[in-house]
Image 1 (tube, one colour):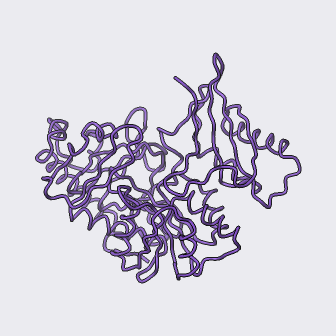
Image 2 (cartoon, helix red, strand yellow):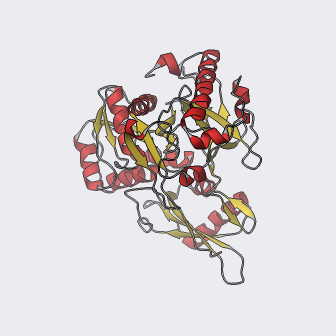
Image 3 (cartoon, helix red, strand yellow):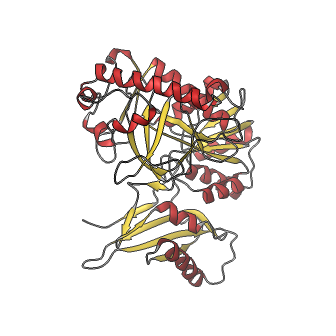
Length: 425
């Protein structure tokens, strides 16, 4: 199902003309509406073509925090209808402010995302993302209402109640972090229960891999798709996989995507992997110009088999911020997960510990659970095999520890913590 074919299947030349028109209007509005952007755009010509986008200044997470709480508003405060915020674990939280029109757009892009992930009007959709300041719960809820689906506002946590709803009601789809979806799937299997009608899982809000998706689909008996968004842009719904699973469709009439080299800031051609940069074309309250997401992916613009013509971003390989440097070697947690899940004996529940002994070199330990039904004759020997495969892929020496199912703490609310970096600077 395509929720808004008039935009999602727009011919490329028409879509790009619309993007340019909205980009030009955005630049002029920012000059008039916000002191910070007015200064940044001083002497910068309005873009005459989309190729001129690279001549406009970037925005970053630091800008958001420096302007805390409402320094980047482009409307009077009395026009605001809602405020969300990130956790702020590394400083001031990132504020996301919305007008009534912004909330309409939020509901629209989330409705498109739900439809792309298999949800249809009148279906029941269980929202297992957190409600409150986090954008996930209320964002998905608004998407259900716009689509005409029935929202079940379960929020995150309270696993027993989540399972009761899944088993008693004809819930067609669920939205959750991938790690929490795995918690639910594991509990169902352990209790020998099956959902009444579940077919689809839309997962996001934390990084995961295709290998983890395969594990989740097998355990949960669903088709799982990837959703992407961030508070700085609007929340979830910026991009969403369709059931073809050939990349995440960017809602391009609202968000302009580009890929740059993280080191130089220079644009990269389609198909080349780099840092995703996003511009909000229609957001009223807090529009953002060329926001550096720090997420690593690539971009393609060919028409998808589903019929959508919007550009697609590839599965993310990590974040610039999440990269670990171990004895001079760059290591992404997603690469560790990808290797681990090539072993059918291993589960997606793992942790990475990084230590720096006094006067010593960095040490990395990967701890991973084996499946309850896995047949491993010699755990230490098997750990050596896994270590060898990890070292061969990551190009860094490390240790692996295989532990029993249930050893690693499950996170029911919030994002899974995969990396414990205990090095002191």
